[in-house]
Each structure stands twice: as structure tokens, then as C-alpha cells.
Length: 220
Image (cartoon, rainbow, N blue to C red; front, top):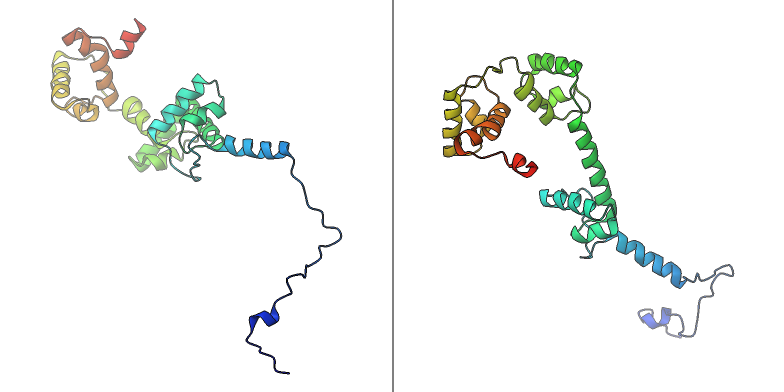
């Protein structure tokens, strides 16, 4: 008898043949309640757009503002909050909010005398390598370290009374270039950029234009 080995039908199981299931195999039924819970879980992790951003996706400034805004508005109800944050889920939003709170606590923490001493000593060694200096100060960021030194404890900062000539320079530079405080400070005698900014908003605005600092306007 000739057998055509190239005929694929020769190797097929008959259509009526069925592979028996193991005796201990039991098909698991999923209840309607479990289905609803699964759907609800997915909805909680997905925002209204149906898109979840990948892990590590950077937050934009607008997203951070909206996160803080809607957290206060909805009193921490994440299901409502994520509806306003396209592509973010509950886990991402809650983790980001906790990080913001931790950062705020670090920012508001007062500087100790010991921290100032370490900062001054480190500056003598590393100069303006703020990241390296911040490593010597646990809980402080490079920005905080830089701002503390430049605006507060730099030994060359001039704390004398402000002169009329200095006020005129600040006003002139502001009118020409806007609020470039670091640039304006270079035109003055060892004034920090923070000193210049505060002088402008709290004194010069009122002195020359009869205006108050925007914050003071709100308070009044």
C-alpha cells in the first residue's frame, strides 16, 4: 500500500477525536461580583482618558499644580482627582503628592548653626559645586544650599542701609530688563539677588509708584 507522506491530512487527528481533560481539572467560574471588582480596580488605576502613563514619566508644572489644587478641592479623594490628570493613575498621584509634602517639609525646616558652619566650610573646599556640598547636608537640596549661601550667609553680603542711588539703579534696571535680580545685584555693592528682589517689592514699588507688593495687596 502506497502512503503519501506529504499529505498533511494523513497526520491530522480525526475531527471526532477529543483529548480527555484530567480528572482533577475543574473549570473555574468567575462570579459577577468578582467581575465587577476587577473592572472597578482597573477603573481606579486608569483615568477618564483610559490611558495610564508609564512608570518614570516626568511630571509637568501644570500637572503638579492641578494635583495640589484638586487634592485640596476633593479632600484627597483620588478617584475624583485622577479625572483631572490625564494619563495618571491613583498610585502615581498619591506617590507624587507624598513626595511634594516631604519636599515642602525639608524646605520649611530652619537652618541650624551647625548646618551653616558645614556649608561655609564646604564652600571653602568646593566653591560653587552645590551638588557636592549638598551631599554634606542630609535633607538639603543643591538649590537650598545655593540659596542659603548666596542670599544669607555669604560673608561678603552687604547689610548696610540702602541708599537712594541703589534704589534708582534697581528701578532703572527693572524697567529695562525686568526681574533679573541676579543681574541687577551685580550692579550694586555686594547685594544679594534676594536682597534686591525684596527691596524692590517691599520698598521701591511703594516709593516710586505708590504700589504694594502683590502679597500685601491680598492681605489688605
